Image (cartoon, rainbow, N blue to C red):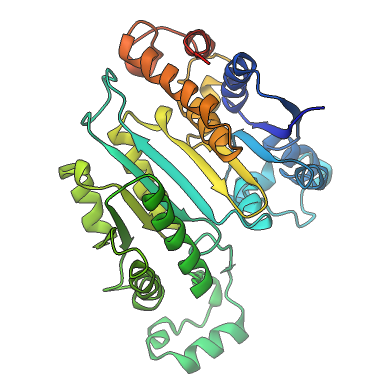
Length: 374
């Protein structure tokens, strides 16, 4: 009997390529797992009007964790035009399946490690070791948006907030509203997760990355809760920065930072910046973690022009596999995989195009698998 049930969601484009790479290292590790392929992605949107079919959601309720490839997302109008003819004009609205999964399964932690590997020609510096904790279910990605703005909503806002007066348009088609929603619970649990990780892995500081001097109520709530929680961890420093300044300081002196914690959009932006410091999205892994299940994915997109060409760097996916192994408690296997990745990069013999080499996605995966020692 297998120990784990793991759902594989390759998704779109190069998501399929890097999922093949993941299976190469998982087969070498001999993880005692059953792998279940699930439907997700653009073709299911076009054919069924749903990129995340209910059958997939039902199946995910039966697994231990999920390994995800990549997804294609397009603007609302463009997405509707790509539906099969009999679904067009029927009211189907595209929404990102990865965002839906985060919200459906309350995967409130988005953890994105950004660590420099020795020998990587794309490193900004060799001493970078940053982990971003991004709140994953609220903020500007909560999906509470309006266009056109309902007259009743506009009337209430106009009556209750003096700054709405400047938006007194007669035609509410001329206004769009996206809500930035924070709750105390969400602020508390993402900050606590960051401090707990810092404590477990001996990181010296946690930096809250927000903008409370301008976005006073939402960023302010996050910062106030962080200050309360920090008192429970006297050996870990709490630093506070504005997100714009953080972007500058990460370029100037990234080695000064260890754990960053931010709301959904700020965390998304800062984590991509941090990923570039250690080689780009080809090295950017992530874990979406909740109380009952977790989903692991590279943070790069589906790159349709490279789909099926096995050109892209699979390291981000393989580092995501490492995070998955850690989550399952398979620490020895996870460390063996990490050591193999580091060794192959340092040897500078097998490299994909982004590192100046000519190796394919699967060449890289096979070389890493060859160097796994258990």
